[in-house]
Length: 91
Image (cartoon, rainbow, N blue to C red; front, side):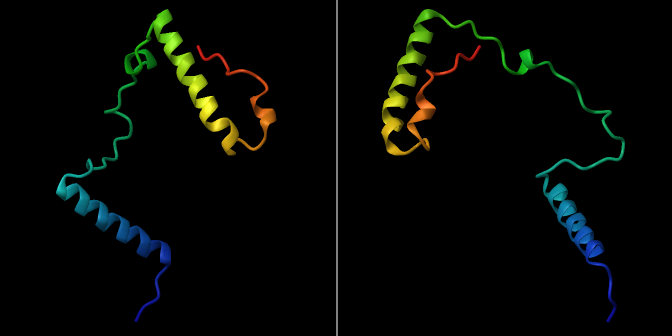
């Protein structure tokens, strides 16, 4: 019986599990090339800018008021002082 460092055992187990997942096609194989295959996308491409109409803003405000009414008295917040300011404006 031999004693080997625990870290080596963990690493070997992780590598074995990773090979099985790659073989099943659940994850991509890892290459040592670094970041060559990565592409940088701007935030606008991922989350397109939405110009909110007045109807949309009204609907959002109504929903927010409804949620405030639902959660205000139920202990959702620790104290009523947290409701002193109205909802923050998110742009």
